[in-house]
Length: 131
Image (cartoon, rainbow, N blue to C red; front, side, top):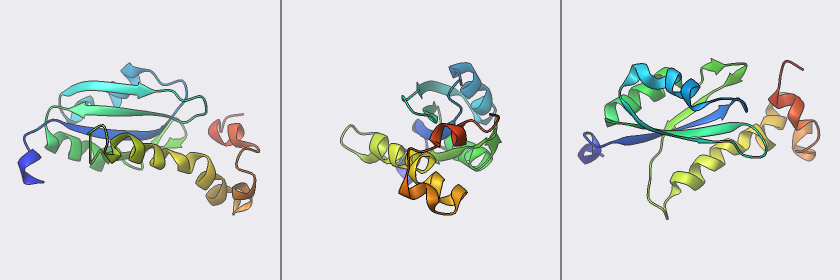
């Protein structure tokens, strides 16, 4: 892990609002260091997620410490260093697994378990708390 300290590092950012823009993501993270790239994803079902690439590994770690678990527009952000950026590795797939809790697991922890039985029932209401 020490050898990658000077290398660029990607951070996974999950549980983003469906209407978030790239500029909003940049505003969340620019204070932690130079952002090289933002790869923002808007899946058919919210929440949105992004990969933010920092110039330095230390900046990525600082961003995780500063933003993981922080509430943003009513949603609690999930921020973690992307462990493997290789095409066959867990970078993309592992990040999507983290995104799942918004659908299946989210129903269980918010609705006391009843949401797990019918993961699709009422899901959009949970994603948009101001309805």
